[in-house]
Amino acid sequence: MDNTNESVPEQRLVEALLEAVHQRQAADRVTTLRDLHGLLGISQPEALRLANQVESEGWIVVEGDPMDRFASIISFNPSKPRRLSGEKRTWNPFAK
Image 1 (cartoon, rainbow, N blue to C red):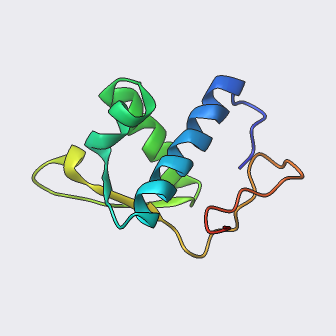
Image 2: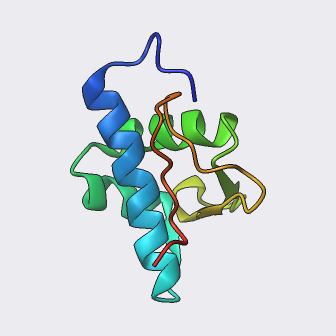
């Protein structure tokens, strides 16, 4: 993920989204777009925009619900490497 045009608060939201999805997936719980705004403390439109951004970068997969966009389920893209922002550290949601 290239953060040249991304603010630090935006990067923290991306990391918070990834961590929230990871924690819920580890507990065998699904995360919907509707859940995101409460988990991240942002508005539903902002949560949708953020999820679309992270999905377009390949970090997550959003399984759409044609009847209700906010009921769409978010999960990790299992083939995506876990490096964020070109930083030297690696974010590995599957590490113990």
